[in-house]
Figure 1 (cartoon, helix red, strand yellow):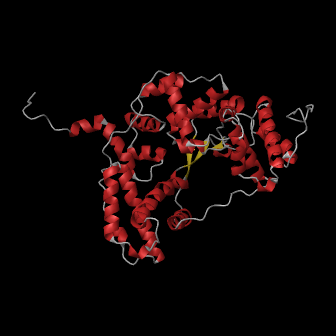
Figure 2: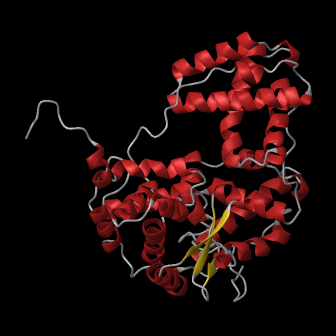
Figure 3: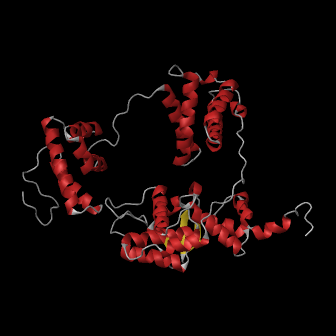
Length: 411
């Protein structure tokens, strides 16, 4: 089959099977997501093979599931399948068909266990009634599952049987095996769950009051800030003559000059920047929206990225992946990887990793320049003043007069 100007693929023989009507549209979507022709071709050949397999097994397109994908892939050589990304290609196909409403978005689920039903209702309460973030209830749910599993096992769950001894025993076991921070997270999750049960009328006693406290002394550490000279070295060694370099430099400046969190950078969109007023809208913790002044240096770096480095895409996310599929960076770990790569290029080795050290560095530098803790807290968008108070520990000039003389030292 010859390739025409408006067709992105070619096959030695005409495709067969239930996927044929969707091949052209799927190829166009791959092209829109940034895949090159040489990358689209093997994916279309795989889809054609999959379509023939579906036809041979009398499976209609509306019945296609991930299970069929795995059965088909097992017929191929596993090593070759892994190397060529067959699994990822067919997963893209499934998502594409779901977007067209050709197949159901979710495959039928197995019947939930009693514990899963209780935990699922609790998770829905956290999301809808408490408006907690996805990251928060993902931390809570495993502790509740474990608590119920230890208390009821696989049997019938009678929540009215819960007592203070069950609660105390669970926390004690968690405190032995977990770090202080994780053990405290377990107690918070358990209190939230027990309040939820009392609100629902499942228990009559206030068992949340029986949850023991885990010691958690705040403000005990020193801010993990990267040194000012290291910040300058990281920026100086970031390439700005490549699309990826333009993107990474703009991200590093947002970290160093505005102290943004990794998640806040990932969430930035093209609409986040008001070029006329020179403001940047940031969505912080809990969905809190703040407007920050956009420094000229940062604005110029973003503008250069938009002009020279950002791939053409309908995606409105500000910073995009450089390789197909073209989309947003996806998660905070992407920012951490950019930071670690930048520090490696600059030849800098620090005890602590990740992007948050730039946020600490900005606060420490502002303190050295005479900024007040209130001003620092305003820029970093701290909800509580005690969060900013930790930076008082690095103001050695202000702390030195408070120190007592060494006993017996008269000089």
